[in-house]
Image 1: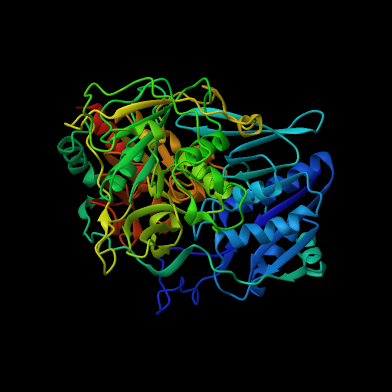
Image 2: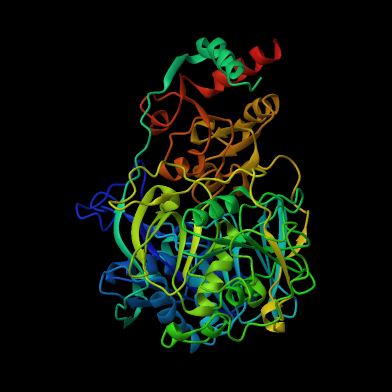
Length: 251
Length: 376
């Protein structure tokens, strides 16, 4: 099984998100970067499938040159090839992104194209689906469990919807977007890291195109600032906790 | 704007989903609205002029491409399918190429609300927006609609304001609502999903006046909508990907809808530390939720994770035990009506979001609270 897995470089955010002065981007001077969480699981899933069934994994990202760091992270986990669709540093819209990815995927002869359900930063919820339509492949999204049929001709993709399990059967080749929880990604091994450094990343420049959805600026939403009422220290707070539970109608 | 809104209906109760009602509320503030419902009957209390009821015989169950194709037909977008851009779009007249609309049910009131008269041609004349809830299904169907038509799609919007030149100014969520984006959507038909929740206040939205999202009350004196039963003809290929549903894995209270959630974080210390939290959750009629570190350490299954990449919760009460409050966790629990935080660190970020704080070790406080509650 030959798999293409598509990832995105996103800022690592912890206690709070701050913006650049022009409000165009997240201020990343103090933060690192990571693969968007759902996509870390997509990489792990791809590696697991090929460990079981044989085949190859290629990781792809659309981003600036710095995104090679995330490609190497994926290579360190057992991915064999890496492709950078190199941007000019601007944010590319969903349609342009999907078009560029489909261009690479079309000629790759992949059996499976994996994405995360949505990027943690832009939250567009559509690139995987657009790529599927451009490739004429079936697609299932938000998947938390993936199995390959015994004859290898189809996959069964499962997710939960309002407490009900949904199962989708897709003939291969297919596109699947996964969610965190489908697996627990492994940590990279030292030999994996060393190998990742040696792999040559294949690079193709992609021109920016205007999108019908245009970002003007980002804002940090106003939160209702309030001071927590301190009920006490340690077990001494228990009587007041019981009183609060009572007042809130919980007990 | 004239809008079509996809309504998700709860399989058990037959009620429209709250998130869908938020989408109706937003669309209503912009102009006339028609609802699209896949199912046997139209849910009561939809405050819209028309309901397009898609017969189960044509699309049985959930098939995302088919649902998108039906919306494209109803919105007069069928002709766009396969076109790379919008060239020639301006000339589209009404519902060219869209037939098979069958009006077999009419409103009790023959006069009907405005807009229903002479609707034999179809509802969708002049549709300028298609909306759905920003749920798993809503975002999925609208992304398919975007892909089918080549139009842009804006996910998880909180406010929309039409501009004079036909564009839309909108506010949408990024980072699961931790950031907002002011954006311009330029498209002949705006494809939009409406954020299913707003974990933080929208605040002053933009310099221009923007219609805010207001949920619609079900069962108010809404005029009875005209119901059009529609049997679209769909290609086999559009029906190929479909959900086969089973109750497997269900059972127990759902984290998303629980009235009380007892949360555990790194402070719980390990996989063996959750028994008191389970016991407290039982006593309070709730369920246990956990932070991302707990699932990435493998202490608890991922389905219990509260946060940006887990479940967004909306309980009456969230008891956060040993949770520092990383921003991705706040994105998941900010919808809680009340938060009690138990933490040894009074400076933990969770404290800025909590209503009540207990400074202490959860391993002492939680068992003592359980004892006190049992003695009542």
